[in-house]
Length: 292
Image (tube, rainbow, N blue to C red; front, side, top):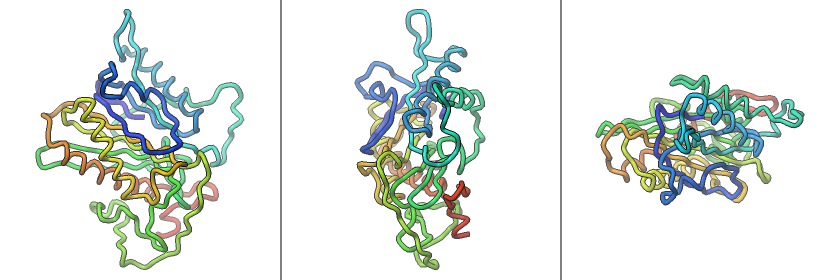
């Protein structure tokens, strides 16, 4: 769950053929609503969309939302991934736990949070490895900040064939996902065949640069390249790949082409970090438990 300090301009780009989303149409540049109050990424397949209900309830109680007719309506786009096959008790009866999970998430939102087996990445997998939640950021020469948050549950592999090297290795900084290079010792990696509904990568790009909705949409579009750099294959008919972009509008508008290039790199890094930070879950093995 991403909670800006105040309502933020947002855009979205969807490339997956099997998405599960909410409040996406209002992000179109021609739509009326100009900003969003939060963005929710959740597991649980379509059940997970209920997490946005809990976020909306909390925001409304705190007076945050689109003011209309004497009340406020929080604007909370959401996207989900499929993790229902990860074990655990799914016999929750007439009401899933996701509404309450969303409420807890927004109530505890802060600058510090866990990655790996956390949030929407808890039950995720990436190819044959445990997936997870990852982040990366970059400071541009003009002082603009761009960051990425990725929940990785992809059908495609994040590793080069027969190798322990991430596809995203050219974009790594400071050994953030192990520092492995293509000339490292190869390790066998089996890439399983996915099945419908089990494959998704969700990304949120955030920047403090001033953007309008059309520019935020273009930023999300450019950031999709990060998925293709870090996962192969990506954007398949089975994937629910979605990229959101947020602008907090704290700094003057900069070079959008440069910003989008950096956003794609950050997305690739965040994807690799999500898998690198993950831990074993049941029979699903993590990168570090297999490769050190």
